[in-house]
Length: 312
Image 1 (cartoon, one colour):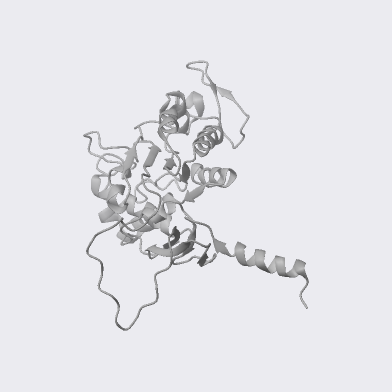
Image 2: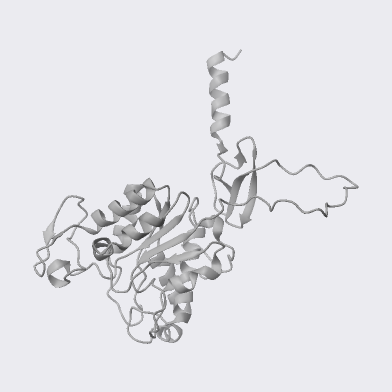
């Protein structure tokens, strides 16, 4: 006979095997629980994401079902309403300012079902985005369940001496400091600026996604993978937030398209894309989101027909 303790353990295991309300319960690549806690039902939002949503499971079908109601009623329950996606980054993300290039943030909205608040600013790094109050603007505006994608790396290099007001201290320490000789300002590492912002956003109830920087034109810049790609992943791991390898997914699509096409996406240099190129980069981010189970942006993807078509 089973003891009471064994029965309690089995019941606990059964409960723990269920996804909570708003938790993921299915989708391509999902290996977690596929049943939901009582009072919720597993609802498919797209091929890569099914979610436990409040409500009862639909009744079984009958041979002669009653005609559908024509009196209207509330809209079907979906992911949390009123959610906004904020974008923090540099010119590769930023809104179109009338230049020959455009950030991927100008294109991402066509693939999502929620409004975008693009706060990215050209020329900024994690340091200057902090110092000039741009992170605080997002932190002050964000509310529970809002999403924030943070993508930096292009403007961090060179250190404070080689890149005044933008460059950060080298390394991964949260306590190390250096000095900007042009201003005398105390400077910290990318890790420090990023973690401070992430922790403040999490305290507001926002869900943060750290994205690695986009690649330069690989057919004209052969410098390889910047260190801030791995730094972005490490920061996400250390703060327990989602990560998207935007660099690798974009590079994968560039390589598939080939030099002739990709060269046309860079009208001014090897860093900034045209609007057409920005759309390619936006799609790559969506694919990266869909390929990692539990990414908080996945429920809001309304168009999964993006390239690259496969995960890394």
